[in-house]
Length: 283
Image (cartoon, rainbow, N blue to C red; front, side, top):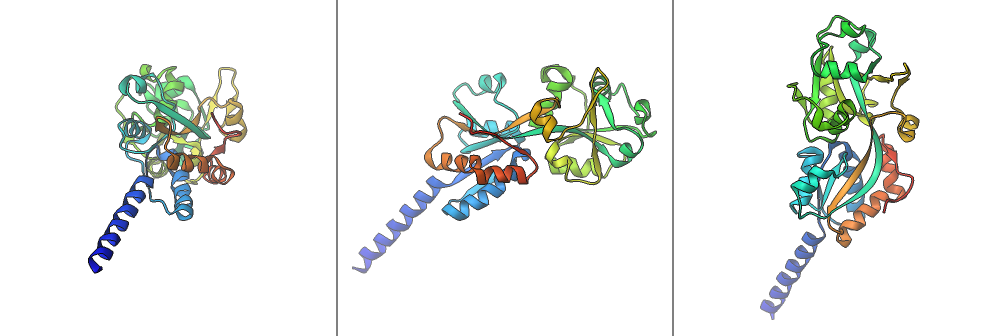
C-alpha cells in the first residue's frame, strides 16, 4: 500500500511538472518591447501560476530567429517581419500581433543640446553617420568631436533609423561606429558622454534628464519632434509598431498571454511604459 501511494505520488508530481512545462512561456527579443512584457508576465504569472521567462538576447532579430527555430514561444520585435526573415526561415509561419506604437528618436547629450543643436535634417544625419560631418560645430553646435553610438545591426531601432536615413537599410553604408545594444545601454552611454548621438526608443529617451531628443528638420524648414500626436499622425517620420510574434497559430496558453497584453489592462502597461496603445485589436 505504501509503495502504491508512493508510486501514485511520484506519478502525480511528474504529471504536474509536465503540465507546468507545457504551460510555461519563453519569450525573447526586442529590448524596446521588453519592459512592457516583463511587467505583463509578472501580473499574468501571478494570476495564472504559469512560469514565464523573458530575455532580450539578440534584440528583434534574435527574437524572430528564436521563435522561427522553435526555441521560444514568442518573439518580441520592434520591426515587422520582412522579406529577409521569410527567406532566412522559409519553414516558419510567422503570426504577428501589434501591441503598441513607438517612435525612434535621435538623441544627443545635454552639452550638445545646450550648445545649440536642437534639430537635424536627414542629409545632416547621413553626413554625421558617414563621418562627413565630424564636429558639432559644423552644424552650429559646440566644438566637440562627434561620437556616434550606433545600434547593433538587427536591432529594430537600427532598422527603423536606416530605412528612414537611406530609404532602405540595405543602402546604409557599412560605417564602423561604437555599438550599443539595449535601450538602457544607449541611454547610459549617450547621457554620460558630452558629444554623443544615437538612436533610441522615444519612450526611453523621455525617461532621462541627461540626454535630449532632436527634432527632424524637413525640406520645407519645419522641425518635427516626436510626441504622441506626431507619432500617431505619422507626421514624425521615424514611427514604428511593436510586435509579439509566434511561429504558426499560437497554442492556447500562448494566445492567452497575448490576449492579456492586448486587453485594456495590458494596454495600460503599454501606456505606463511610455509607448502608445493600439486603438483596436489586430487581426
